Image (cartoon, rainbow, N blue to C red; front, side, top):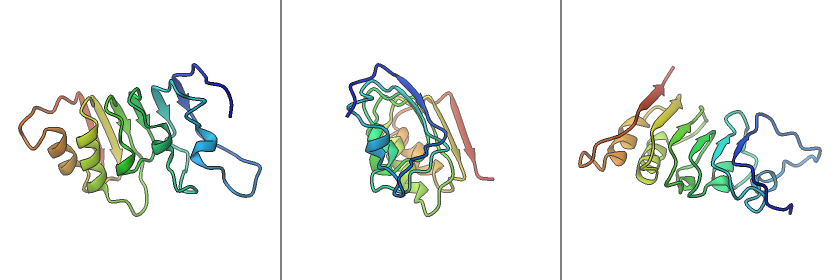
Length: 144
């Protein structure tokens, strides 16, 4: 492994690996090399080749913005302020919405694409089922 980097923002649009087998998420984004990440944009990076998603690999309490594919169990990002997701096949968007609303209470903006079933469980969990105001400044739900 490399030595720790002071990089706080990382955007990856494409990752090519010379080996026939794709590298793991931990090979691309090792926590030991990127311990200070606060902003991650991997929106166009396909990470379905590995059992561990990129979101799970970069998840940390200091992460403030994330753009890309995520799994419901990877959202242990309590200080996440901005999240953007893209369309994915065979996804339970209701479960992802509930997980995001439950674990990311500092959210200011959410932008999802093709995420049918996401909004209601997300907003219910974010507002603790009506007991707290939802303090989002931007919510974009694109179903087309």
